Image 1 (cartoon, helix red, strand yellow):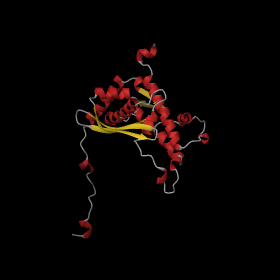
Image 2 (cartoon, rainbow, N blue to C red):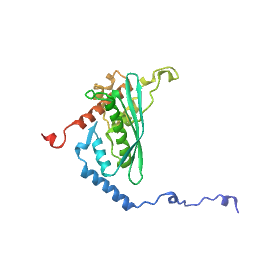
Image 3 (tube, helix red, strand yellow):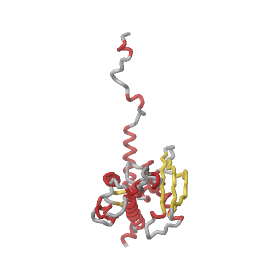
Image 4 (cartoon, rainbow, N blue to C red):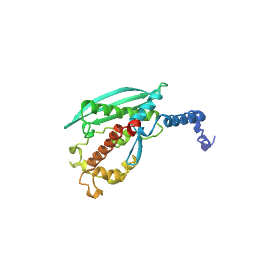
Length: 241
């Protein structure tokens, strides 16, 4: 046998060998059924618009979870303290009757709470748990829609705060601002420049005296305040009264 023939590669590779067969008609039918369910049981009160981005609120996810038989299991709960603040972090699992599941986490710091809501143990813990539930549910049954919780805190998971003495030069690198990446991050979340200016209380970022972390906290606070205001707004007949 010639040397080149020993290592001859087949001209056609069967890439479908590793693919799981899909019943396309059934998949399309399920997707249309999901869209119809959303249209029939959800209304405008189940959504909030933040920075030009329409997001589904907890009321909407709870309706869908109830109709689709989603159950929630708490996998872990942690209470923590940092300086003068405290908070909770939850990891939960959302499951359907056929065995599918998704895990989601959520946290809430006592400084996250809007001014009109007291940062009690109950309120902070409840908000952290709600965020975890909504994220897990959205990942499990959502069709790519944005959850209001994904706009809060920029959709980020809990991150350890960088200590000043961990920088190789001893500098406080929490003050280093990479504005291009900052704008891209929020634009991807649907947050407009006007919304960020409003959170920073400036007409131009050249006038903003704070750090990137402080600005992020201000944006998070405004997002949370608008979500809370939307959740507490009267709906249905009460809104017409």
